[in-house]
Image (tube, rainbow, N blue to C red; front, top):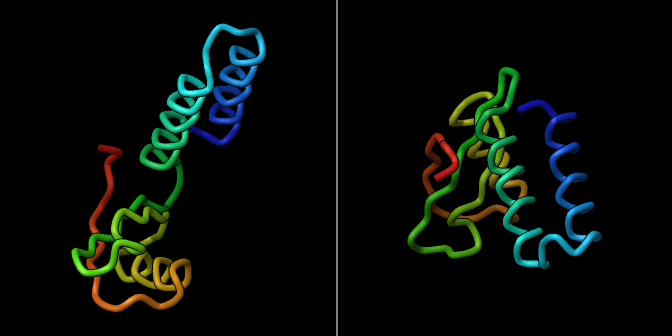
Length: 94
């Protein structure tokens, strides 16, 4: 999914919410689904990676786009203020 498609999907979800066709929970599900699809089907040289840490809940589940596993580790460290031990794995949206 490209950026324009993702933005259109979010716009459609917002319009449905404004028209009373979905409630806030439905809007959140639709937007979350759009963002997950965008991240996991990213069109470019980057891939989605998820951080996994049993010891640090602030890190566990963090998803970033990066060109490599090492690049993903660096991005996660930057985002969560230098966490300790964690692993990164390719993320497919599930």
